[in-house]
Image 1 (spheres, one colour):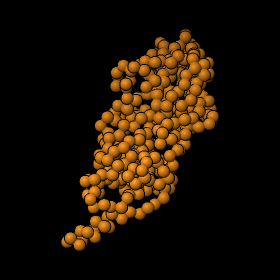
Image 2 (cartoon, helix red, strand yellow):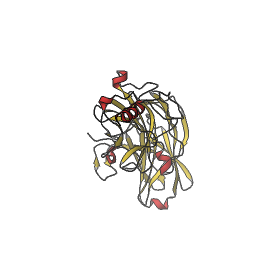
Image 3 (tube, one colour):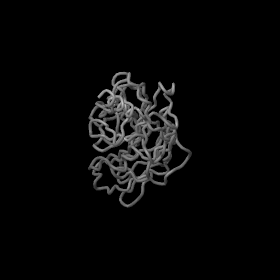
Length: 317
């Protein structure tokens, strides 16, 4: 029995070193050390997820998936992502309360755990590059909940030797919301909202946990998700990359009674990574005011007063 147990331990300790591939998730584990104890699959839990993680909702939904990459600091002497790591782009799927590995999990040890640094990225992409930097583009059609969600880039870097790791992903892009107010709006035939000439491509750096505009690539139109269409308010929003909106820049168009109306920013606004911006305008008779002013205060999704509407669902200070 002791011989068989030793054989099983040696077999379990063997690992296959595989290179990173855009189309194949891989897990690279260091050789087993009997002093570390039993290998245990890592689970990612997030009890505070409802506060700070989603642009679309207040919590992750069943079936949402993330990429998890892990660096073994003991092996590399650094927490920096390389081309091949302890674990590369492992898919973890939410059941509504925690993330479990879709296939082979990342392993930890129960007696002497490894010092691991995790890099989490939402949404999951099988083609995500294992390099520290990758390109993330928002889509032109964000008109549905699902399509809007696909642009909701969130990330986190954290060190942990726990078997159950708590995540608190943060938004990396910008949520721009337009709110049109007035009387009898449902009789004004407001339709076909879109953001115009907006930059759509970003460079994401996982090591520094930063996002920057990638060149000057622009979309002629971004179709937003309509979030309110009542008698007194018509609002819509889209996710865009960090960028500059100049004073009097035409960046929003709405159709009113069959006529397109151009909306411009009243002031220059720098769209900063991880923030939400609300632009307000009101109807003047049968026309929409041409200038949009930024709202730096408002009500969040839970009904609480926000200290700043720029704090796009991030943790309040």
